[in-house]
Length: 77
Image (cartoon, rainbow, N blue to C red):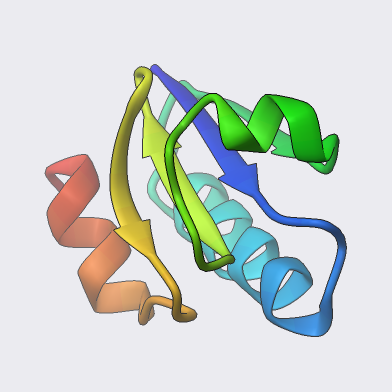
C-alpha cells in the first residue's frame, strides 16, 4: 500500500503525516508513507486544498486533518 501526504509542509500537513504514521505503526500495517511537497507534483492530483491523502494513487481526503478513526476505516483496520 502506498500512502502519500500532499502538502507544502504546513502544520496541518505535518499533523496529518503524524496521525497516519501512528496508525500504521500501532496496527502493523505494511505501507509506504511519503510526503509530497513539490507543488507541481501536488497539482497532478487536481486538489485545491491541503493537506490531502492519496492511497494507492487515489485522493481519499483533502482539506483537513483526519482523525485516527477515519484513517483506520480507510485502511481497513
